[in-house]
Image: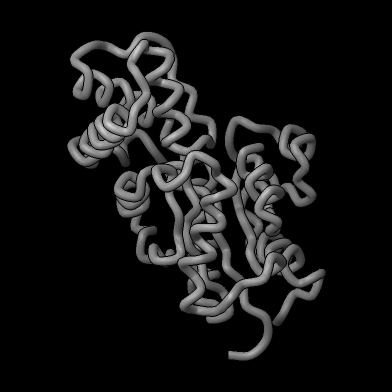
Length: 239
């Protein structure tokens, strides 16, 4: 292998796929299964780690936040997705350009790509398997929302897992995501970011959060590729 190498870390929800509220529905089922009563009020997912969301849900519902109650809800959430996994494709879709982008980078030997997601690992796997995307990412260089409350720390976890490949410098790690949480994680971790306005956050929201590179979506593979390499290697897009 010659030339620079990249570690590309993809957000899942509203970056690669959209699930139209399926996750919120699963939270309601999980809370009922875990605590025997209906969840009262909305659930704000919005790019936060699962540990962060679980902590807030427990507080809002008057349940003491302990390691035990957090794990109880996380396990119930994983089970709700597993039980309803056949229903997921009917509520979700792959976002424009996501499949082509994943295939392109998976076929480039200079790129190692994983996911950096707020989801539990089992849930992220279900979501990507539903659309035949799971084999395109390396789950051994990925990080998940039940591994740390702070999304920036997930970047550190993923980089540590990638050390068996090589030590990736800050400018050789590229986060691709759709929320200000992704922007803040990349900034705090000191790595590069390509933001996509494919979720609830507008391009202006993402720029206001500090994103220097914002794409409307993933449909222009050439532009995405240029921005990924430009962000990582100072404007030099290897052929």
